[in-house]
Image (cartoon, rainbow, N blue to C red; front, side, top):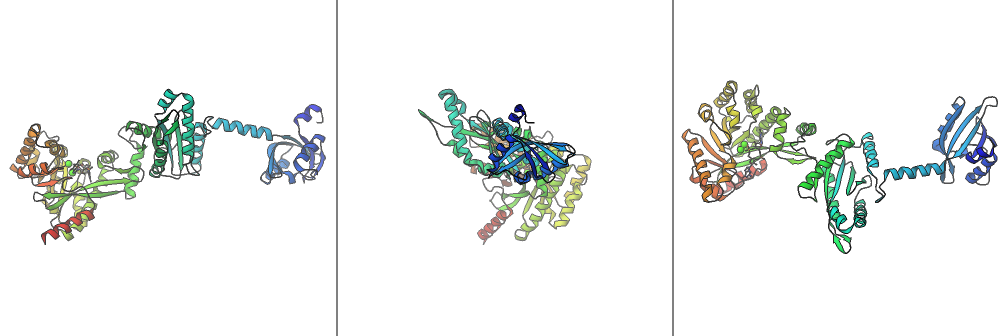
Length: 541
Ligand code: C2E
Ligand code: CA
Ligand code: CA
């Protein structure tokens, strides 16, 4: 062990007993040790060992004959990494410790590790580090968190017109601006090119989106790239864990999809990943499920007026405000709800909610009529009529003040069984209205055959009438024809989507019965409707 060759690699050889008292130190070891401990040579080895590694050392004694580990010695307030190989001398009940100083190697190794996980240009963590961090966060149960993918707008132009060194300067400057904005637990990484990622710990997507406003502003400031200033933007896509993905690659993919939405929508903006028609998947269904349970759904009421502009009723319209997706329109979520098989449940909920509200409206306006939409899926259900009657009993409303809106196609595809259900409900006083009238009928026979009391002319026809120009004449004739047809079989007519005075005037002259549209009132809360009762009571007084 004292051969010159070995001395060069071995920093110290010690012999200790079971109490770690030192009985022998090799000569090079004495020099090496005094560099650590100062002038005096230690008498016990444990005194030298970092407290966190003491247990590891104890284990070396328990090993049958040899043991190999890396541990730290303490040198003042610094640490020295050593590799320790321990060999049992059974006869003497002592141990030989062969010690290699590996501090150099440890720091070099961490420098290498740093280089492997960081981007040389900006010094930011790179893709490898990012993946590791996301996986670590998931393993640590950090929830929620957000992955925001940033792609600079206009970077290629800077690179092409001013050269790569200017491009590099822009990337460094962007890094400088953005690192100032991120919170202590957050992470900023560069994926390569002009793509960056921000990780927001413990944030829902909406909160992340809010924080990202500052990023948009920071990048929007001019970049001083002499001879001209460069103006850039940034397109951002956000995905939330676990709602939008439960692993690194799905989160990054969905953030990327959202980022492309930002690009396509005109750049320099932030989009939270949502599920559009192509990428509707399990997670939005899960969000709807949750939303139902957590009371994220509610109703609004769009007022309906007679031709003297007197408030007579309202249509109840479903609303969903989700914590991540924000407000989602019924045209977006109802098809998904239907597809997920949740519509019978949600539809029944909407009917009950609306009828409870109607009961409250009646305390102030006993003649108020409420229209509730019924999905074909609901209407075709096994016990639809029973369910409606049950809600009426439960809420105690006057059934003659309830109108169920169903679409033409629902009626045309109806079977004998559903027609009987309809007739049964009609007997109890409930009325039916044909929604979106004119958009798809091929036969009008159902109008006379079934107990329908009104039609709602689809807003597409009302919009098409537009202003007074010759090319809208035929649209007007069509609307007039619908009104006449309905009146000829004693149906009332509601026009929806009325936005202008000209449309109102025309419909009034054509004999339309009720008006619904932004001109007179947008969908509003129940309180909004009640305020209108009060306003009309004041006019009457
Ligand atoms: P809809 O039954 O045809 O409802 C009328 C839609 O037109 C509503 O949109 C309303 O806000 C909108 N609207 C009303 N007046 C105007 C106007 O003057 N201009 C314009 N541009 N739009 C106007 P909303 O609330 O987005 O509802 C969309 C559709 O979602 C509804 O169409 C209905 O088919 C469905 N829906 C809404 N609530 C429910 C519900 O509780 N159950 C079922 N099954 N379907 C519902
Ligand atoms: Ca409707
Ligand atoms: Ca409609």
